[in-house]
Image 1: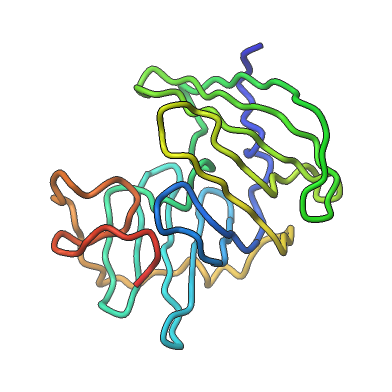
Image 2: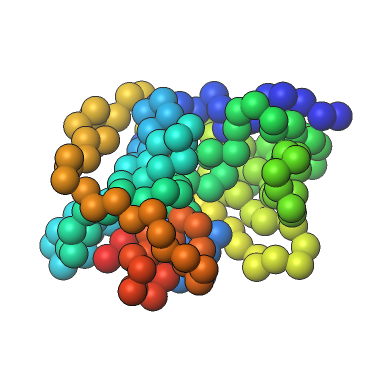
Amino acid sequence: PESTQFPLDRFREFSAIQTEGMTPGSDWDGWVYRSGDLMRMQAVQQGKTQYFVDDLVKGTSYGLSLSGCAKLPYLYSRTFPWFMSGPGYTYERVAVGEDTVDGHHVHVEDITIHNKKLANLPHFRLYEADDLQGFPIKIVNQQEKVRQWIIHYKNVVFGPPDPTLFTVPRDCESLNNLGPGHPSGTGAKPKTPPADKPK
């Protein structure tokens, strides 16, 4: 049956470590924080913290890296599928069964997301940990004819993250005309090859 309730909507204040992702080259560990409509995804490279701060409602992202700060007119790929919520979305939720993932007993359900603006309907499987209030510690793509991917979460902690984690510089360069060849959510600059990992 269709529902207006997105199962991820109830997790609005948390931190976790995300491993793997939906885009190629995303098999690395990085912290992810959520506070309301804001998410922060970060990694440490060369001893320095690189991060993105995204507004899930406005669909914008601030990326801070070794090369500077950029304001981007799309969301970073690691916000998927958290942003797929709001007016115009409906969800098919089908219980699949139970399993054990990383020592957590989980309930498993398949989610298909409907929206008139989506050419291809996202379809993925959630592994919801009973001891983590149903938090999806594993998400697996079920959509055919697209790249197969898996997302894992670990070290999940509930509660509001430090609000300073979502502060961004005021002098971020606005990049609004990336043109074709730069897939949404990569954080790539116009003359930089697309990459999922912050640089």
